[in-house]
Amino acid sequence: MRSIWKGAVSFGMVTIPVKLYGAVEDRDIRLHLLHATDLAPIQEKRFCTAEDVEVPWADVVRGYEVAKGEYVAITPAELEEVAPESAHTIEIGDFVELEEIDPVYFEKSYFLEPEDVGAKPFLLLKQALDETGRIAVARVTIRTKERLATVRVYDATLVLETMYWPDEIRPTSQLDLPDEGGRTAPSSHELQMARSLVENLSTRFDPASYQDRYRLALQELIERKTKGEARNARRRKPAPRVTDLMAALQASVEQARAARDGGSTAATDGRRAHGRGAAGRGAAGRGAAPSRADAPVDGRGDAAPRRTPRTSSAEPGTPAAAGREARPATRRRDAPRGRSERGKEPVRRTSAA
Image (cartoon, rainbow, N blue to C red):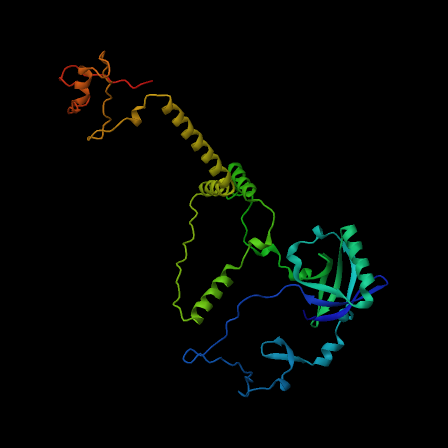
């Protein structure tokens, strides 16, 4: 990595020479401006609005607009004169607890690396912050701007996090917010459902489980177009319309529970199905009578009446038995539903217990 700042950390009478490195890197895919007809890059030039001529960097100065069209020029030498004393020093003034600072104040993170002569005091500050559970509040100037910052322990080093000044945080009073005690206030049942949804979706933060889906899709699109493939257009899903708050909360809770308990529920259902199958096979082995639902079905879709096999006193192998065995089996047409074969009194069928 390349350091972006060199200076020293100062707290009390201790000075620690350090280097500053960017803790994060921008992975956004940058698209260039091109001429549509020949895809040539568009070049931006600096033009003077009064003379309509191109201006080189050597003739460019900085200025502040004090009124519409009126500016006060500020030279680099004048900027150097008003530079704060923290231009090359991270001045630690207070030590506080991290929970006291709202995250809205934090701006950007930088890693600190000690110079060789500052290794021991660097470790001293790191261990002191780690054991006390405190963070340091400091001032530092990066790229001509003085910033409020904190210094805290991060992994094996110290991290400097620049902060916004208090007057840079916009007040929430500028927002048109609903009255918590008005007609839009949620009911106790809705609040209970919302708490249930939060509890079902609660987990430990895992940064690796989150991805920049837009950047990945854009990379895939660029790779396809580079290979000359046609674009695979994807239709966006329409945003769901919230018509009933309670119905939406209930559906969200059920979806969260299903996603969380899906694996255990599937395993339980599998064990139950296996148990029912084993019980059914055991009953069939014991000669249990089939139920009405398991009976054969005739051509009309009705359950065919069960026939009880006739018993005979003829012993196997006798002429009578042999005659019956040789006689081909014939099947009579089923009687109309609910009546006997002779069309007399209705026959009441009873299923086996």
